[in-house]
Image (tube, rainbow, N blue to C red):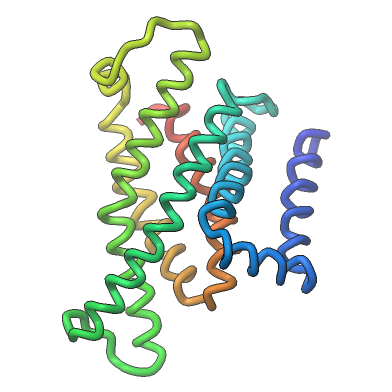
Length: 217
């Protein structure tokens, strides 16, 4: 473990301690309930950026800032605000469908598990691919601008993306094998702990999307 690894881990542990300590945990929960968009912005701007830095560390073998890291952090924050809204939309939608008996849930433990699975599966099979594609486009745009290249426009950006690799890895592998199970567990947790789970999943999200861009299909 080098100095960069230690600093990254200490930062993550420091953030974790704020969530786990009773006094600061209550403040965090209260702020999340009262300012969901603001907290969503901060959470994803910080932790998803940490995930991107981790991906660079894995691929390059050393710690280095990503191109346009500040701009990308802002984009992550905005996407985090969208995720806050999507969580509520899919949760409410599934609960409404269950109430109208459009989805089978069973009883007891199976009811909780299937409800969480429906929310996770529907969200990841519909919203997640579009969300990840938008992130890919914004990421590429920032790279292009920060490297001083001629602005390619939307058509140029779309043409530069390896959509085959995106579908094969991000959509067909990470969604069924990681995101659906991970978010199923997330929606099984009490509401206050879902916030913490989503925060740590954003580290994985940043790492996966950054890693996918830096490796061949």
